[in-house]
Amino acid sequence: MEDEKPWALVSEVGGEYGYLEELVDMLKQHFQIMCHKDFLQNPVLHGPKIQIFFIWKYFPVAEPSLLRLLPSLKVIASGGVGIDHLDVPFINSLGVKVANTPCVVSNATADIAMGLLLASARKILEGHHIAVDPKTTNLPQSLIGIEVTGSTLGIIGMGETGYKIAQRSRGFEMKILYHNRTRRTTEDEQAVMATYCESLDDLLKRSDFVMIAVTLTPATTGLIGHRELSLMKPTATLVNISRGQVVDQDALVEALLVGTIRAAALDVTHPEPLPRDHPLLGMPNVLITPHIGVHTYNTMSRIVEKMTENALAAVKGLPVPNEVKLK
Image (cartoon, rainbow, N blue to C red):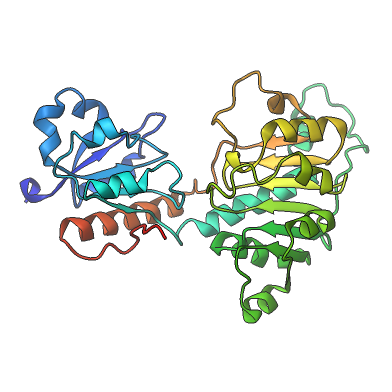
């Protein structure tokens, strides 16, 4: 019966921060849905019945003032892997579990990583603009890119997504270096012919493409700054599909302007979107996409499925499959 389904708070249906209609239909099979704006019309009335707090594209924001209006809340189920937008200790102190959706996002994120690398190296976007420009009468021979096949790829963060990137790069016969908190097994390394770099500096000096695939933590915030960029080859490209805060953007702008590195390809920035007058937006050697790493219908559907599994488990008092437990 509809009335027996637990209540869940969501951002909105459609709109800038909302769910596709098809994804909402998936949620409605198991939950009664209340949009954030409707909740705010009468939080005293609605607050006590909300047991699930779904976060999609970082919204609704899990602010303490909002969470304190939800006395029956059992779980915050966030779509995606990152938890940097959540104060997990505070949420746990309220007796509320936190869950994310690992594993389901790595393929799509690895795909966009390789897409950015290829588009930047081979000047695909510039080529498109020339090809469709009404003023184009002759095709220029000066649009020269960088060879990807046989080049060296340095992956910073060899978790699931980083490893998927390594698997894809083998199709381009790339030499793979990686830096990670913990070394992968010999079997893992041999499967993608990857070489471990204990020193991040060593990886930066040797790579033609530096791919950032780390989780945002206090330790990785500002991981790539002036010093790290200065170690890279002047022909190197920086690709970031992790979080914008991992890179010092002022340092990146300077490095791109003076030729410390060749180019940058970014699916993430800080903030998102960047201010419209930000220097990165006008640089010819920068390619930016609007954080679309997981934006395929299949991946978004799997994210919602995982969010649903986590939420149902919490409501039923069962172990939450993807509960976030801080070390």
